Image (cartoon, rainbow, N blue to C red; front, side, top):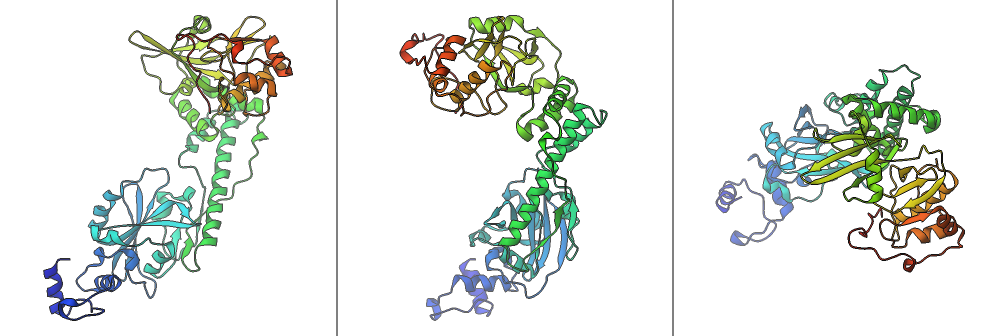
Length: 486
């Protein structure tokens, strides 16, 4: 406010009374000025932070809901003007806060707050949304204080139920509705559409339906836990639950056996339609592909005898959903298949440079025992019949060597398993391997180092305890440090 404005209001008896002093030496408290501005007939509420608005003495009228930039604004007739409580819709990217104020002002809103996606000490988090620069100077606002501005409990939707239809249809006084809680980031509808294309007992249908049920169960538990946390944290009379999750039966991962789950994954991976690709991405979001036949992907940019041997056996193949495991695949990329593992491989040319991306199997379909481990990029396994395979890698844990960390620990556990069973699953932990193998995989060894079965068994038994000096120094071309999986 400018000085001339204040003097005009003061001379007309429309300004706040001073706390002390006379004439030009009068002093006012900030809270008194805010209280005067909020209740003044000069309509200055949009310059007063919500934390200084007067509390309502009774329930204020609800003015309805408005859609606003992927959010829903609930409007209330507060004592000093229209107030909005803005609820971002789950799964949608909220607009920048600065874009919301002009839209709200066009509807006559003079004060607003947005509801956070998370909780603040168990209570719903709220953040004032200034309508004018002057309104941005207030103190933090609590859920209880926001409720007091409308003189009645505020409706609350847990995150898995913050949907446009549920928020816009709410009215004061109505009982909580029951709705199916879902993950806004995971498209369960796509999973169920794909499942409907198969007979009910088909492995793909069983896998997809069970995954959708697991998502619904998880989100129902999450929504119920959030409601309970809010109930414990908020004051009495400040909150009314607007939506509750429908009960979903408990789901056990073993309700569908591992063999059926893997067969379902193979079915989806081999499909060549866009729905299969989309479903694959949803399945990866859920558990990173724990039951997928393939785990970590790897990139090959530099030649080596082992890499050349692997490249020589690759076969052209039509693009399928499996190639989404390797990220975006351009139209000019060459789609290949590794016949030893059925893994997808993409060859990309960039001028004179060639890059290959492949997926490591989570377990080998070999019939011959482990013969050697080859430390390369990626790490390779050769069996006694001479077949070369990319070393198995899980969907979460990667493998490496030459440093203390997760990668070498996982490699040590993988070696321990493969020595006993060539078809063993990839390492799912960085711990658990014999000390001798852990010590071996932490040694800095040059790229191309071959560790024979005899050496590996001796290291596991502790009868061979090599050091860095037991391996020749790496040359500049082939001795680059291995990728690290910390």
